[in-house]
Length: 87
Image (cartoon, rainbow, N blue to C red; front, side):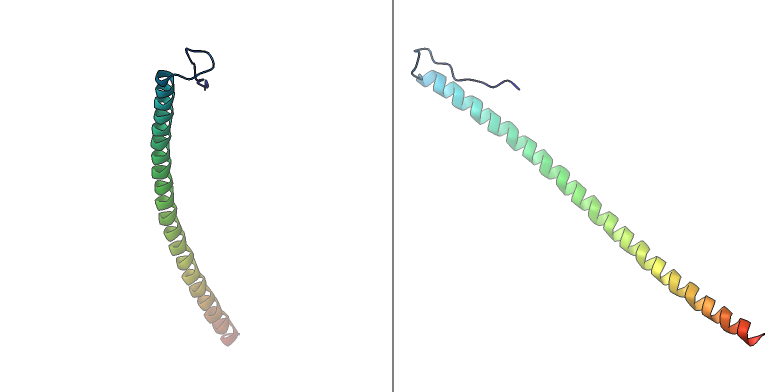
């Protein structure tokens, strides 16, 4: 990006017109940065929302897996008891 420099018509002094032009360009720069910041905030909010949904889904899966693991262990212990009973 090209840097804008302040040009003066009178040499080493800044005129009111050149100062106003420079301040206008600074204001425009802040306006563009504000729009970029708004877009970044929107994207971050979307990412946070998606992450929250994903976290809830993963927690649900982990809970379901734990339940299934307990059921399998319960069945295995019952099968072992039946095996020892019939030997």
